[in-house]
Length: 258
Image (tube, rainbow, N blue to C red; front, side, top):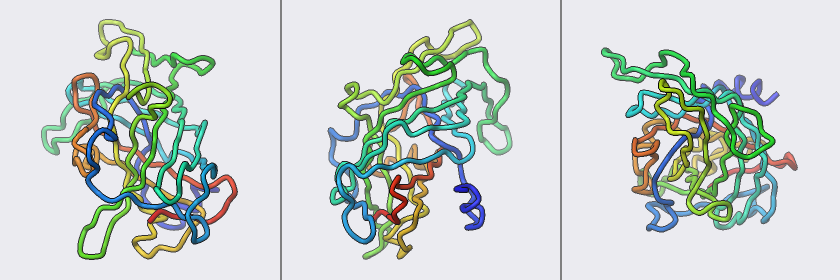
């Protein structure tokens, strides 16, 4: 139902949050570049504890050019999603990524883009039972952030950082089998921050409140340092996220970010 609705809106969706090994400090320790926004429900600040759920649109990828590797995840389930403060634009999410596979990549000589080559023999293992192989659990704190593009006009973004109530500075921990063909270590901790641009439900663009909020990450956003100097890394290698999440309230109320 949700995918059909988006198709009727003519949206071309990028993939979802396929997360992988990152090492960078959380953005909370430094000054934020931008202004914190708000989460609105039916025209007022969202109440703490309001429950959010969502789904991935398409497949999600995390590219690690330095390793010639890319993690591709087919699905995501929202295990936990709740608003901490509507007035401060804060929320928490715990996401279960499913059917995740590691692929080799190579640089296209003409376009300069990384392209998938072969599926690598590195089975991804979730270190937290009872989840099946190919699963990754990520816990993040979300902050609505505004970026002024011209006088009085701002775009709306979501900055995701580690939920330090879970594990200090760690978004997720990924285990893989390690035959000689696998470029990743057995255990990779996900650290750092990443940014989504809100393309549906951005009240700063005079859009009305909707049932759905769509947030999209891209390689450009991953490397832009738009709100923090702490970028994504796979081990010691810089990483780039292409991701899209469709979010809605369990109460089915209309909402938006501003």
